[in-house]
Structures are given as structure tokens and as C-alpha cells.
Amino acid sequence: MTILGIETSCDETAAALIEDGKTILSSVVASSAEIHAKTGGIIPEEAARKQISHIFPVINRCLEESSLAIDAVDAIAVTIGPGLIGSLLVGVETAKTLARVFEKPIVPVNHLLAHIYANWLGREKAPSFPALALVVSGGHTDLVLLKSHNQLEWIGGTRDDAAGEAFDKTARLLGLGYPGGPAISKLAGSYLSKHPTNNLRLFPRPMIGKNNFDFSFSGLKTAVSREIQKPDSKIDKGLFAAEVQEAICEVLVSKTLKAAALFRPKSLLLAGGVSANLRLRNFFEKEIGSRGLILDFFVPPVALCTDNAASIAACAYYKLKATPWRDISSKPELTIAG
Ligand code: KG4
Ligand code: ZN
Image 1 (tube, protein in one colour):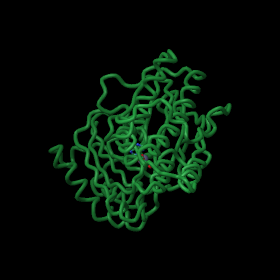
Image 2 (image 1 turned 90 degrees about the vertical axis):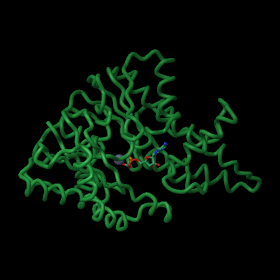
Image 3 (image 1 turned 180 degrees about the vertical axis):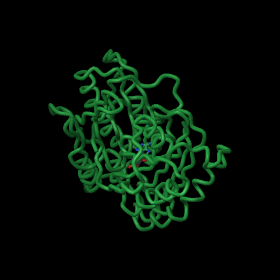
Image 4 (image 1 turned 45 degrees about the vertical axis):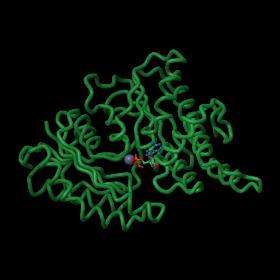
């Protein structure tokens, strides 16, 4: 079965063709990040305006790259939320129009769940259930237990800022631009290659010892700002980047593996933009090994951690729930549990 996925929830405009939920025939992502880099963050109207001009060229390029005509598409999958309303509308209304004109079934997809399904793409061995998934994106941090494709239990999440937001906001304080995650990750990587150290403890590890699976990252930007404002402060941006990265990663790893020890999943899945972070990926691998946890650890290739349409089509394949196009609408406030 060939599914055309469409994704426009934030500043990307993406389309992908996926066969049987795992083979990528083509995947195209157009970003307007360079525009938002100039303003230090996303301006929703600007993002949506760009998406209107990108959407058809992106879908056309996706069909061309796979040498398939729209006739060969069995279903259309589209992100309905969560996300920016103007951006979501571009993808949803385009998908509905295509479904109507070409008489294709349409499958509404939850963007956060779709991040998790990046772990099914291009793999010989699919993750087994029960699977514990940590979704860390720009707007969300959620820990969920998937008992099957259709049974999800939410076990924790952030009480304030998302992990990606913590990277973005602290990067802004350090003057590193937008998006902050890749900037901090790069700077921290080069600092650590010159100063290998195990002693990064400048910033707090919020809620790390609490007996729950919740997170809180908003205090981190206050801690960074306080450190910068100290009268004798000599800011070494590389050191600060490494410290911020270490604080976020340690909390994410510690809480997730505490949940893994309790729920004993067969697989552990990372997903979302922050899972592109190299330190986070290595931290998980090392700790899973040293704690002797018996589970398969999955993390998507870097290009599939951030927003893309391949994950949208993969998610639709496993949760196939075709819906009449008239009943599909954008849902900016959707949560991972629906
Ligand atoms: O999943 P995503 O592409 O979009 C949302 O659904 O929000 O995530 C974007 C977030 C941004 O906050 C960005 O700074 C962060 O992912 N990010 C990273 C890295 N690459 C992207 N954070 C840390 N390290 C990275 N390498
Ligand atoms: Zn996302």
C-alpha cells in the first residue's frame, strides 16, 4: 500500500510517499527556518504564507522523485494537529482537496504520534510492543507506553517548557540564534572535543529525584540568565552550551529509564527534534548498557527526528482510520493521547 503523507504543522512543508509503512519511496521537506532565524523565532503568519507557496511544488517533487503518478497513491495522510492553526490549515485543506478530486481515502494523523513512527521507517525489525516512547520536540515532551498500535497510555510529560523549547530559549540567551537545539549541540560538541570532562554540573536537574514521570524545564533558562548576569561572569559559550545540553539530557535519560525499569517494555523509542541530539542518543545507549536493561533501543536517523512527512504516512499505515474528508479539520490543541 502506498501512502502520500503531508505535514505542515509548524515551519516545514513536507510530503512523502511510503510503501507498507516502512519503505521511503520519496521524502521532500521545505523549511522556512532561514526566515525565522532572522527574527529569532517563528512568526506564524510568515510560516503559513510560505507553506501556501511551497505545498504544491513539494507534493509534485515528491511524486516526480518516486516516478509515481497520483493514481498510484492508495491513501492520503495528513497532520491535523497539534500545531499552528494557519500552518495546519494549509496541509489539511490541500489533503482534503486532493482526496476529493482524486477520490482517495484520507487518514487524519496526530503529529506527536507520527514522530514515534519514524522508528518504523527503513527497518528490517520493527519495534515490539509494549514500547516505551519519549517524544521530545519543540513544543512537547511526553513519555508514553504503547501496548499496541491502538493502545496508548500517557505516563508523564512536561509541566511547563518542552525540552526543545529549553534548548531554544537558552540558545537565545547565549546569542546562538534559532533553532537553538542544533546550535547548542554543535557548540557543545566542539567544546567537549577540546575539553573532555565528566564534571558538568553548573545547572540544576529539575525534578530528577521526584517520584513521578513529569519534567520541568522552564527553570533552566532562569538559571542560565542568572549565571550570565553575575557581575564577574565571563561567559564561555561553549561551556554553557555543554552544561545546558548535559542538564537537559540527564533529566530525560534518568526519568525515561526509571519508567523503563518499572514498566519493562520490550522496546524503547526516542522521537522528535531533540532526539537528533548526539549527546542524548549516546547518553541513552551508555545508560541502558550500564543499567543492564533488556530492551531494544530505537532512535530514528537524524533527518527523520525533525518534522517530515514520511513519519506521517508511516503512522497512518499502522493506525489506518480512513475518515470522510468532510469530517476532517485542523486541531491545533491535540495532545498525544488524542
Ligand atoms: O520535532 P520538531 O522538528 O518540531 C516540533 O514538532 O516541535 O522539533 C524541533 C525542536 C526544536 O526545539 C529544536 O531546537 C530541537 O527540536 N532540535 C534539537 C536538535 N535538533 C533539533 N535539540 C537538540 N539537539 C539537536 N541536535
Ligand atoms: Zn514535530
